[in-house]
Structure formats: C-alpha cells, structure tokens
Length: 342
Image (cartoon, rainbow, N blue to C red; front, top):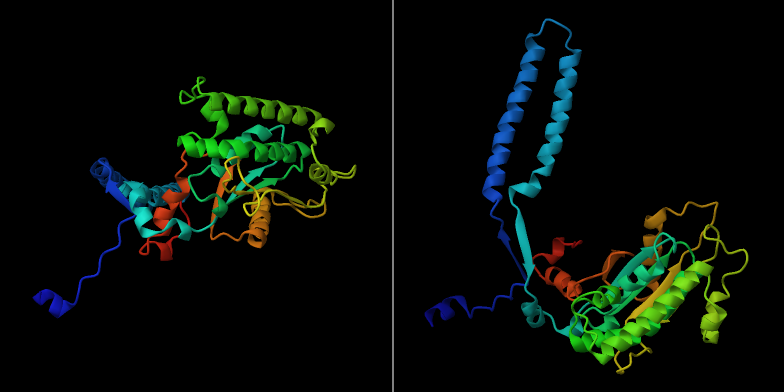
C-alpha cells in the first residue's frame, strides 16, 4: 500500500511476443575465435617484421601482408554471426492478447515467375495456393503474381487456381492442415485417401494440372477451356504482336475479397496477375524490375504495410508464417528499428 502511494499503481508489462536463447556452441565459438585471432595477429606480426628487416625486395612480402589483411578483415566481419548465436522463437499464444485479429495489418505477397517452360506454372500455382491458405484473415491477404514471360499459359493457370482455391481454402481451414500446398499435401502421409472430401479435391487438382500442362505445351489454353466472356476478354490482349520481350502491361484481378467467396461463403484473398510492359528499347532489370512493378501496382490496389516476397518454386509450409512475423513487427521495443524479417 505504501509502495502504491509513493510510486503510483504499477502498469502491467506487455506480454512478450518472441524470445531467444543462446546456443550451446557459443563458448566453443568464442574460444575458436580467440585462438584464430591470436594466429592471425602472429601472422601479421611476422609479415611486418619481415618487411622491416628484410634486405631483399619487399614487393612479395608486401603483397602477402595485404592479402592476409584482406582475408583477416573478411573473416572478422563474418564472426558476428558466431560470437553470439541464438535461436529465436515466436510466442504465438501471446499475439492474440497483444493484437486483436481485426487490427492485424494487411499483407501483400509477391511471387515472381518468368518462363513457363523453365518455371512450370503448376509450381507457381502451388506456391500461391499455399500462401492464400494462410491462417490469417483472408480479406487482409493479397497475392500478386508477376509473369515476366507474359505467357497465356501462366494467366490460364492462375484462372484455374482461383477456381480451385474456392474448394481448397475452406478444406485447409476446416481440417487445420499444416501442409497447405496441394502438391505437398497430396503426396504426404497426411493425405488420407479414405476421406471423400480429400479424394474429391485431389481429383479437382489433377484435372486442373492436366489442363494447365496442356496449355503450357500449346502456348495457350484450349478454346473449350475459356468458359466465359471475361476470360475471353483477358486473353484477347495477346495479339500477334505480343511477344515476351515486347508487349503492353497486363493486370488481371482474378479474385477480389470484396466480392468473391469460397464454397462455404467465406471471404477470399485478393489474387492479381501482373505482366509488366516490356519494350526492347528499355532495360527491364529482370527480377528487380518485376518487384518494382509489383510495389507500384500493389500501392495502387491494396497498399499493405507489410510485403512478403517468395520465389515461384518455394511454397510455404507453415500456415502461421505471417503471424510469426507479426510477433516481431508488433513488438513496440523492436518495431521502430525493424524493417525485415527472414
């Protein structure tokens, strides 16, 4: 009572959102660094002593000294990772207490692909579906696919993915799947062929895969697979003058959370296909240019404060990925100096 009178009521400390622990090899690392440092200093001392007291040409000794100084500098810069190795963990159970779900920030997810033959569209589709199925409010997730090859087959693949996602996302949510990449799930031990719903989804997935791979072989989808006028209008942009190196921009919103729903009536994430303008007279800067375009397009459409970038062939195997990142971005002590989480 006296303490409260003198100091005022104590404020409740915010719950920790992440923690870390030193790895066991810390002591051995530091011992090795100390021994290595002594060895480097002895070597440099030898070089300096040779330069000062040699009677022959000093060129060779000077070059040896310079090379060892450079190598020692490179080694020293790399030791920061070994001096205090730690393992971080996210306290997801505290995140719900610290941030309400309605206050979760929106996230824009960028996936880049270029050549449908070197980077098969089905691989990119699996990556996109794995992040669309994140355990995160779907209306706050926007997936942008950059197709630097400007391929009809890639656009068709994501039109098919948008249809499949209406079945896949509620299935992942209802069954609390960890493997939310369809290809990984159907080839894992988690998949049970005795489950009718899983069998039905696998049939849908395999039929989608056949249609997409056939479109890749032909370079464009079959006419019978273009189901409505909206699809026909999208593919009409591929004129005879349209080439991977020279074409106008193509931006196609395939799913919009404001209007699209899954089979259970739940909201869907945004899914946007982007093929930036290409012109032979202007350098396109490869993937850096593609990401720059996605930043500008997403700033216009969704403008999320957090951006997640993925390679087209690297699916996400943890549905809690965004929430794990939020454990750092939502920490008031870390947030002012934090820009990047890997």
